Image 1 (cartoon, helix red, strand yellow):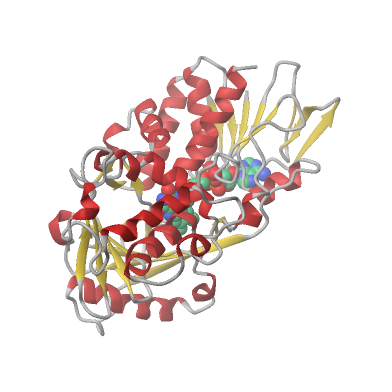
Image 2: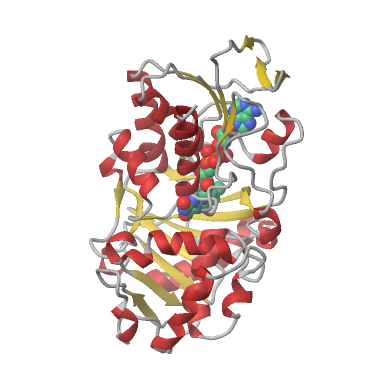
Length: 414
Ligand SMILES: Cc1cc2nc3c(=O)[nH]c(=O)nc-3n(C[C@H](O)[C@H](O)[C@H](O)COP(=O)(O)OP(=O)(O)OC[C@H]3O[C@@H](n4cnc5c(N)ncnc54)[C@H](O)[C@@H]3O)c2cc1C
């Protein structure tokens, strides 16, 4: 069993298959595993940071299963009950969205639990996502006006789809809502990595694979695949070539552009969107109100603020235009939002690191979503995994891990 790509999609396929007793070999081009979801030591900040802040929800069942499978059940932290805190940096107004337990959403009837200046009936618009056809965008479904849009739907949709609401595919939001908010507060508790993304999602998986006797080769890029009789027959890995025997199976868990270069006639999403993160080293540890690990920001440049000890980090999704600006300018702009949120001096810019992930995810527009291929391919022993595969979910950790599980299930069903 050969798996190429050790991002979360490849790792989740590898973990599932190794746990079923299969002999697994993983090849990863990078010097570290984790792909777009990783931590590293930043010398300028003298701290371990994540390439980008990653938010999950307790109802992300594939991620929860993966963490359990790798013995990392305690790797995520978050509030004991669902709560989404927001701040409008223009006015200083703060609010919290607090869904209730159970499937009947009575929280929308309580002014203190819903978005300020909204009415209970505004929330009926949620059902429009359930009925959204494949060509509809988020704003086609719910418009682009009003307090509920500005203070809830737009931040959520842009974060989930990494695509502006006016072009983001509405049909991808309903599965997320169905698996989280629609199941009540226990399924939509926000979760972040306690120590770091690698400590939660990568290191425990590599340890488990080691215990199961799997081989993980880093710094080994797959350069070509030979095909014959509708099968993958040979892997070209630069210095080495591997002939695939009749029972050998290949899971390709690389980004879409890499997959398209390796598999003939494969149709994949071609456009991608940027996510920008800025990390600030503060003079001392700062917590957010009510010990929540994050804060939604409306009306500024930054969209989400996270704190871990004395590091404050902000995230901006669908940030292609902003990414063209110099790092110093991005740091200055977003620091103003951080300073407002944490009551710090907006002029005293601390040490910072700006990370621009230009291909953070594929652009999740209706047109690009249509280009997502399935797990199976035209070749009998070749399967695909990755957050860009047609899982029905947006390109997120949950989508990436589910794609790996789907590949493993398809292989088990052969
Ligand atoms: C800044 C940022 C913020 C994000 N925020 C969130 C969030 O808040 N919540 C959330 O759920 N998701 C978030 N995501 C999305 C999430 O990180 C991705 O969906 C997920 O990590 C994708 O995993 P993957 O395995 O599909 O792809 P990748 O992580 O890209 O893995 C593919 C792997 O294949 C390797 N590879 C490529 N070509 C070859 C080759 N030829 N041979 C061998 N190996 C190869 C690559 O090196 C890489 O390791 C964010 C992403 C970014 C970048």
